[in-house]
Amino acid sequence: MQKDRLRELSKEFYRYLKNEKGVATNTQRAYEGDLDHFLKFVMTRPEDKVDHKTIRAYIQSIYRQVKKSSLSRKVSSIKAFFRFLKRKGYLSENPALIIKNPKIEKHLPKFYSVDEMFHFLDSLPAANWLDLRNLAIFELIYSTGMRASEALGLNLEDIHLEGLWVLVRGKGGKERVLPFGAKARDAILKYLSLAGEAGQGGRRALFINAQGDRLSYRGLLKIMKKHQIQAGLLKNLALHGIRHSFATHMLNGGADLRSIQELLGHSKLSTTQRYTHISIDKIMEIYDKAHPRR
Image (tube, rainbow, N blue to C red; front, side, top):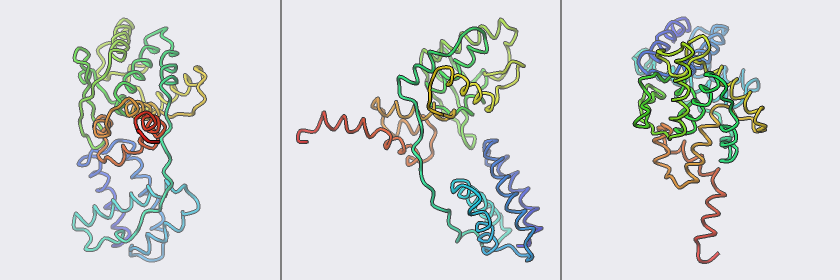
């Protein structure tokens, strides 16, 4: 395919991701960044035709400049783009089909122990409605295992405090219903009550900032980092760490992998199985107690 035509079709691919596939905003941004970088490289090439050799040349040009995880993501974005072009009939053959993703080291998820998680939540201040909002969102994420982005995307009508359940929209626009506990319910009730008194009631978004707009991911990350330091927790956990803590604690508490998979919204069980490696100490403890000959 001619490279100018390829650039034109990239816009159609971006519209497909947003309107048909319904990918998350961050995922959309990653796809566009990866493909724009690839297309800039393509435009510098002397040949007009883009084939598997062009893709290999691009990979070689950035191989030593980026982390393997970033390289793997970029290759995946390129492969997804060419799959789209083949499926839409713009290509008779997919030149990216023979391109393999580089192997990357799989790191085990970081998480808090139960005591550390409780300490983090119990150490959060409750002086005003913004403090109560922080407590409510962290309690909800830990209680349900939802992604931080999913929690930030919640609207008031999604949360059902009497029934102790919440409707979550995950990756690809998939919906799932998640239960939550009394601690999360009480924290949300206190937050909504004080937010209403502060004149911030009636907003559609469940979690809002001081200006009344939906709280951003970056804003929540800054809040978490601040309170981690204040709580004296030395583990450098990102927001996803609370979700990892939920999954690990559920597994250690006896929940089966299939149930955890449903709660986390994983499409593949293999993604959830990462937590079995983390819980090997718990497995060994059960083995030592249960096996008759050891």
